[in-house]
Image (cartoon, rainbow, N blue to C red):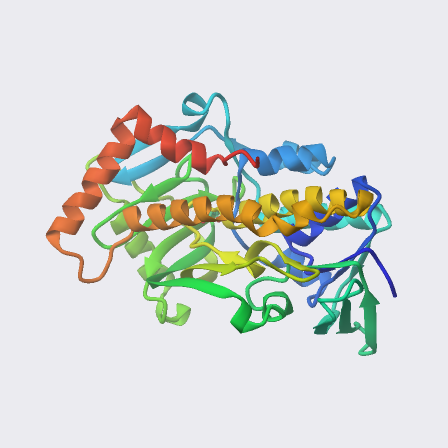
Length: 392
Ligand code: DHB
């Protein structure tokens, strides 16, 4: 088997790239370890930046997003027992965030790619990424039937997440990993209840952070800061609701609307960047190259911006062998990656409870929230990064 661009991973990065390359007439094949049904059922984050929405519109894959996505013109920061609103649209000249869950994005991208006749090999596991220094690198993999196969390519893109074969194919002595592990995780639930708030609530409380998000009029998504080593079985419905209500309580008498909890997960929190994001004919995109803590929902959006740059660089390469943009890919992508790293770290630091924090630290944290919600300049800094920085 041969193609121009061999893509490992049918996540947002891999699928968006395949759709963008198709517009240039560049052939690609996606190799994905998981089954389609599993990918389409995995619950992840829910917020799309303006630039991600614009990209999906441009690619003609936004019909359902436009119908079912919910536009958020602002968000709530809650501290001191009160809500403080950040008005994205007002502060950024009309840019907004859109709530449309990642697995819905994936359903739309997979359907669109298959409708183009694009190849996505599900249930296929990469065993080796070979010959990256040559001009015909190869992906060795085991297909869904268990047969050993080889895909010969001009370029390989590792868009296979933080535990995939992509990053591992860059020799450890030729890359530098930047890692910060946070001493807490997020306990996430899905519940059958009406929305408690039209806009997301990011809440800072002495007991720890909580986030109130939505899915549909009937299903809500909520998170609260927890011990990353805790286990979900320790948390009964009653205990979860008591904890969430305590973290949202305030002088305004706010109460969350409760309902049956039908999913519980604990996610660890870390910040990670791998530099460089390329090696020979291999280019990394999305979580394969970097991970952000979920506060601020930058993960999927950052994957989209990586492949936006990669698409342009691959366009120049296949049009006439111009390597300059591909060679500059790491430097180009990393500027936005580190901005998003800073934002995600900042939102996390400003809103979470840190074990052993002094009273000084707590007062300073509250002062920072006060600043962000009362100074138009500071609120604008948050808003413009939340709705997404321009790609270029
Ligand atoms: C959601 C997740 C986030 O990390 C965030 O910042 C906002 C919303 C969500 O899953 O809805």
